[in-house]
Length: 133
Image (cartoon, rainbow, N blue to C red; front, side, top):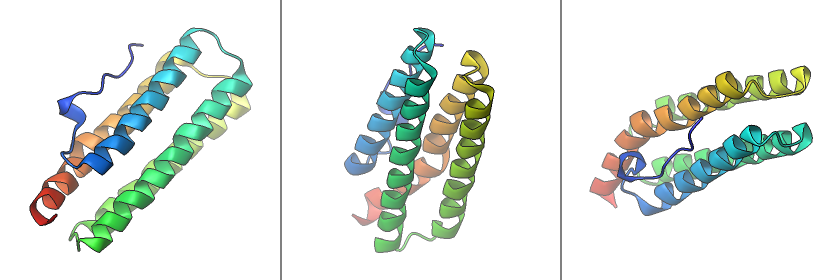
């Protein structure tokens, strides 16, 4: 699988959110490269955990911004965050139980998991924040 490329397509136009997203893309790419290189399962598990932890922190960051700026879509956006974390934790459990990554399926899931949220709800949030900040 090819690495994700950070570019304007993934930018929501709010620097502090874009910086978080860029870090998440970097972590995804580290994981992708490590899977391709056949890194040890413990290392891959640690990288996935770091990606999840950074995502949880990032979601809290976004939720604080939504509350601070009275974003009307807060409840829906937060609910999507919770669903995303639940789905990635299920993937993590599957990977741990099976002893490794299914390089194609698991990485495709993570790529979609990361990018689709940015390209949908985060773009809406970015547009809103650009108007009120």
